[in-house]
Image (cartoon, rainbow, N blue to C red; front, top):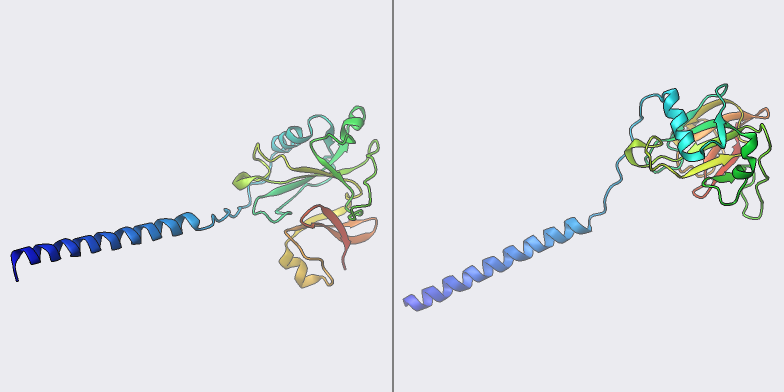
Length: 208
């Protein structure tokens, strides 16, 4: 076989090897770019200090409400986004009632007993106990300065507050709704029930 033929074969083999390598690199890069990002799972943070509670309420509600220190707070992933949320019992500041009830407020005012779209939440009254729910943002959860999705819930403050996971609820209760995240179990007006996230708002459901 002549030297020219050998040289030509070597060039062809080199070209084929280079093309295969490029194809492999391109496929690997495309697969990596198309792989969906996995949201980081939240880890429970330390117990909040009084200063952290005040800072979270001030950041989201300014001076429109004050913390009711006679009631406990509840921490959990209520909307199921893997970021820690917090629910704090607050009371409206009398001079700020118009701001609390304003349609332009930064928070969402809801009554968990009124979940149908045609039902309108009534206005907050003076000295009415409210449940302030602050949804967390990323790993820092409700402590994050970007945690600004907040709710004020009427007719939602009862006794015996506690967080329950969907797994805990499924082993002890019947006829449960689909749970998107943790729930707040409590006794409200003598009835045991839960406050849970529907995917769009908070709702109340009696449970045994």
